[in-house]
Image (cartoon, rainbow, N blue to C red; front, side, top):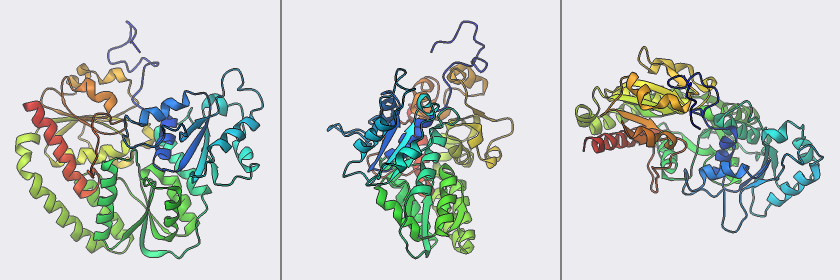
Length: 436
């Protein structure tokens, strides 16, 4: 969208331009993409497919949302402006039944705003269906939420409505609830391997990840967890699940960067009665990583500026990692509503640097970055929507949703201690390329 001639520089006061955020339904689709046998029925027109196509084959090379045989995992009702006000209950039920394939583990139902505001009672339609597999409603809150809300609401609906097996909880078993598995590539496969390794270092076993890329049935393993670790992408889901199973609930941040991972490990160690073991493990890991990256710091990182544009739960870990490398974060923007930003984020940034929320895209132009003190030789961490434009002035690491220019075929974590090492590796390579 082109700015008007009278638009203020940077565009903050122009209310109609594209904003640095993603819509609610993208988050719902990401959650469905992370459960390989779950189908999503969207009450709305065919533009619902565009949200899935934002992910499939672009952000996620291994996405299974769409299939060559036409049995796509995103199904729409085809409701439009002509028929939206009629009685659509029978038609919605027919579409839900079409999604109830033999291979499906569950069906989720949500709506686009034009359909939700008509007062369609999806819960009543579902209750009267005598369904042969689980069918759950995800509230269609597109008018008041963003992609992080959509992801969280999907996990919450599953936590409240999924039938869990009766099983004995195990003291050392951990379920990770609220993990943001935004694609099925090697970066997230590597994350889960690394988080299992870190938990094993504390004598704990990771038995379930909500969601972990597997089928619907794999979520059942959370019933055996003595501890539920709540990550910020699924707080309500974690509380609901802990309330149902009686497991200990530990709410943490995201284990990103050295400081972020150390805090995560120490929080779990304290909650599970293993503080000394956690401290020893974290100390050893930090020494190992420091020995690998220490020689790079004066040549690639020291006193360089950084711009961080990411979801609010990752900004703190990225800022801490930049600080550990001797960089100066001069600009930070959130791909998410301000309400999602954790309180401790303010302490991760230097005085005078504030996180900007829901900026207009025009506010991320070269002029604004120059005003923040960024220029040639500095680094930006940003998603693919911004990376191309920023490449003209800065070294760029494509990271976040969507990530269209960097993909991972092999295990390549960005969380945990090993993930911190890989993150430094990518940042150093980007800076080295710009110097060349």
